Length: 476
Image (cartoon, rainbow, N blue to C red; front, side, top):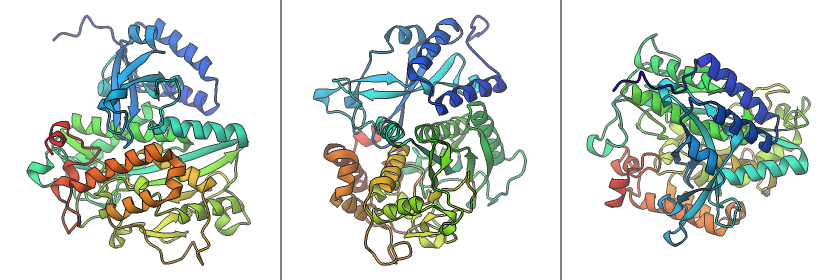
């Protein structure tokens, strides 16, 4: 079909980067959302080449959902975008299905036309309940409210950056077809830092990095990881909500690029037994008035007392929140000490088996790294649980808390039991949302073999929340 008559927006990667970095700077500087809304509406009204706005939101488990709104319709109805919440896992019951989507205008992102289609921009939505309040199962809104509240009351800015590992497999929809094939096929059998220019893994990494750069990620480094066909593409630190949004966009970009190459980007924590799994190491710090308050040049490992208290609270509640950081049956295969897995409830500057690592740093980069997070976890839930636990949680009287012989669960059933039984997780999410989340995880677990065994079973892929196949799930 001819496209000669279409005049939809296509911008060069350099133009996209300039626009997105400017938007990112406005967000970082906390420019009034009302001011940004007026600017974005004016832009969309005047830019005739934009045909549609893609609104993104995440369900309780962290799966990304997208709706395309015609631009003219959205400009007239942006404050009354309703949708059926009963169709979203973990959201409303059918009897109370109507929810609204608000637009988080500062999150608007310009995207490459060759990857996402011409004439589109992306923006994150905020799920709103019938009474106009933020919907309690929309954890992005919960995180945003918490971060904004801390900034207003204490002057804190919550900062995070994530090192997200994934695998690249041959063929499209390799995960959805796993129950038929029972196997994943590598595109590269090199290893850490090893790939040749032009091979499929290197081409995928290069293309993904280019798209990220254009979308304002401010890339730092990228490389093949330890396992065959494994990758990691790192980017800059950011304010916590923006950082969580970038996790969702990172995975979306990877999947989109891979599909266009006839491949599959997988974020299962341990899709192949016998090689290293994939993690989402989560680096966090807190700043106040532009100063990193985790830093103390005279402190232990050059961390301030405030930062060590933060660490101690996470170690105290590590088992309580394990299900939030390791959200799937498959995630517990990764917590295997034979593959540098962070399964010990410890903090260390050198031991990569510890849940928390203290990286070598300076005043600008001082942080703690929570290593036990799986790449399939809900990023908003990860950020919210880590920061709120580190700031508000209790500190156990366990002797030598940071080096005691304590371990994370090795299966989802133990993690579920810990999560359900913890008063702290009720404080985090409230009884209703906590139970909804636990019930979803229980349903997934009960569809899979109780004992993990020595090879990946089809159900742990088939019924994985990120691979979700509505037809197959409805047949269970």
